[in-house]
Image 1 (cartoon, helix red, strand yellow):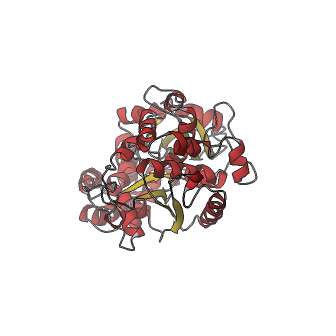
Image 2 (cartoon, one colour; image 1 turned 90 degrees about the vertical axis):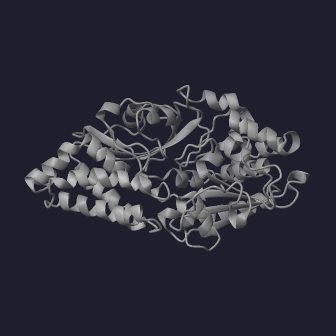
Image 3 (spheres, one colour; image 1 turned 90 degrees about the horizontal axis):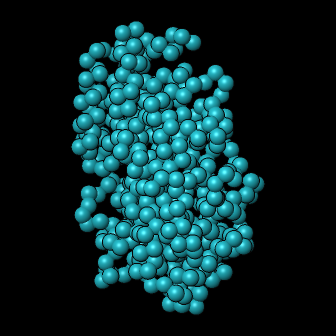
Length: 431
């Protein structure tokens, strides 16, 4: 993966990113690190912090795009104590790797972001829930949390005030469903990681029925620069009116420089591919991409110049998700690509509800038969019906799982029919 830092646009989250090592606490403090929490503790109320985050228009970077400030405001003033902050670092969706890069680049940015979140929610306890494959990142976080505590930024009476906050690192048992908010909270409590249908919402009754605010790694890392520089500054970083801030775009697949790039929210897809990711290999032509990880619909060639922000994609019937862009060229079999994704989702279903438990393996099986020359004409209508059924699932896992299938049927149905009529994969036949 490319590790070069983009210099064409302001680097906010990657301001301390080094090509060969992790930023230390001294590196972080030289560039204004921990100034935001000092400002918060000495001059701002928890309501002030909530308003600044809300005014910044910071949307959750984990995929759901829920306003981060609004989530904080849902913690009632008279809610019980202790209150919890959970950082979701369970980055298990295929193609998504931005949080891993960010954790390895600047761990103290996350620590300070959790401090700000905790102050605004009057929370005393923080937990970083991290996937087991990120063992190096987990060890880095444990080390840097200890360093931050020794420096007086964690523990009791932080910076001489009455604000106290601690952070623990918790390694996940290793299932994709644990990335879902309520399933993650169940996992932390030692329960089976099945989702719960709100209400009550976690900010009312989360961990052990106490108020819990859960945010993504990137979301939390946006908070220190927002507090330091102001809500208007953050909004103005975006290239679109509906956007705010910068975004970490992780790009992989058929590009010359796959990697993680910090760019303004709303940068065009074509610019990301051609300029920052070094274009496509010689002989390759853009056919499609997944714009936000495995649980989003394909963007076809017609969307090649689309601004990559939440509202623009939503208006076009798509989702930015995690902004993990997976690029496919003209030689890619879209049936095979979709089958690969569905194999993952079928395996990772928690099995809690019938639509997901039964529907994902059924769709996977139909796609396998089509890809391997055993498809029948009626399979196309069955796939379309199954996609609709999975929207009745208990949580967002199943609708996300069928998003690539919906994209396949919407933009590449001709390829599906070619497989069925030719009784083979036409892309394999042409090799």
